[in-house]
Length: 231
Ligand SMILES: [Zn+2]
Image 1 (cartoon, protein in one colour):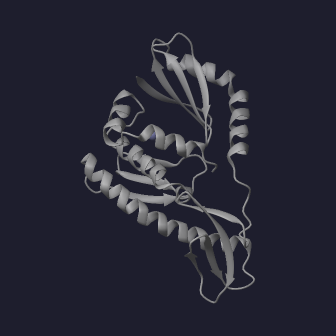
Image 2 (spheres, helix red, strand yellow):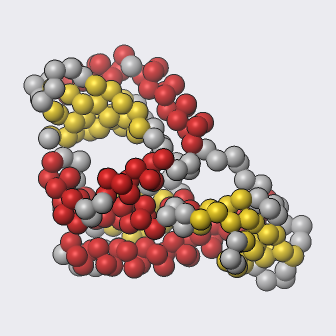
Image 3 (cartoon, protein in one colour):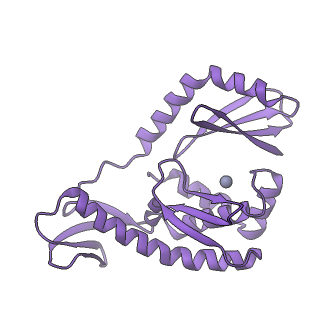
């Protein structure tokens, strides 16, 4: 399978060439990624024109997916439910001169000085998410980069509304979405291996899939779990 990418304004569409008769457009959960499967003989200009006529539909589907998948906006108050590594915890906001987060059996204790705003509380929790995610990623990136034979791979964590991960093949640096801190380890592992494999193969083509099968045989299941969880 050959793959390519087209852009219409800010919209990115992945094109996969297959032995099929007609163009097939899909919008995928959870972020609304757009793909087009195309007969092998079609050229990109033709596909782009087709996609442009479907823009209204694409936007509507993306909005629907995002509305379905979003967990309610958080207020960072006691008894509110929050996720960490695939488990659900009740938040307990505790007045404290020291700022931080303590993970207990069923609760996430958020230690903040009184009268902190919602945004400040969110920041405390996300600083903790970042630190914890880095520990998990240090292990997973180290382990899989070695297995794949890539040597040391640098990574960073950032906020993204559109992607779980991305990579810069030239600088050999991978970026992970901080929201991964809420997901089960096997889902984080899938994103790690996916991005590492991109350092060998940029496109989502046949070779990419063979490499995924080789280095993470269960990737289909791990990916499915991730995409079915709310963001
Ligand atoms: Zn990819």
